[in-house]
Length: 317
Image 1: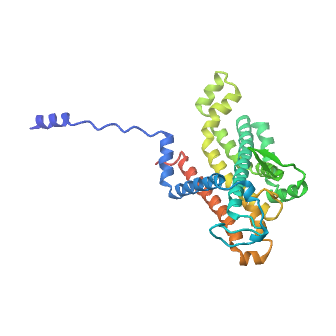
Image 2: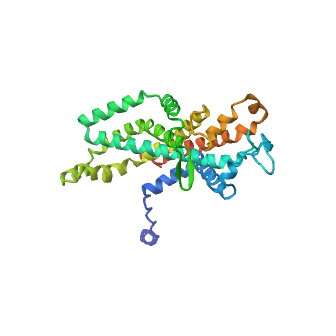
Image 3: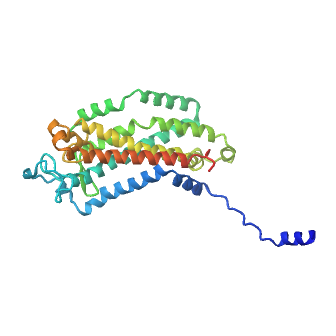
């Protein structure tokens, strides 16, 4: 009987070995479990399709076309989002205004990421005097209020920067100014995060081995250490886009941001708030650009939260 049982056990099919998940596969599984992050990603894709796909139906000339006979018309079949104070179609302007808002958000975040990564990497890798100087500079930058600098620079340079042509479109020079200011005042937190990662990683065995065989510092920084710090960089870049969009919105809301004729969601709100009767009697004037700002910022924040959890190496599953 025991011999028969042993033969039966021997003839049982072996269970297939479970292949361990790669970090990419594990991160994707974590991200899919984050329902708000998935919802944010879907919403963000829809918003991007709206802003850039809308150009197939509306031209920029139509978005800027004024018709004084159609001032503050409520939503209708011809103008689904209504019209503004000079008869311009609000739907068309939210399409092209959304492009500028997203462009500012992405560009400013890229500027901030590049500066933050470079300063954090140099400070963390070299340490000593270099670290001390760069960190003191970072702390000094924390003392500069972003909103105050935006207001002063926008007021001083208003109308002095010529329009620029990008991809066949004409952009107000204030777009470049806002991107530069937001980017140069939003890199400090990322620099500290990258510095901390570099301080930890440069003591690892593979970095010590690379130094031993004479690998150049530049190669160690950009080929060996930096790829291992991409998780916090990606999260910071994602959240930086949302912060830049909000910064542009409130500076434009104050009338010192992107100037006409270039439309953004922020300066559309500024025009809508210029009279109480517009807010009370023409709610479509401010509701739609405000709605797009809220949806975009929430979507990016949800996406950033999901990426932070998905890319966290301390998470078990």
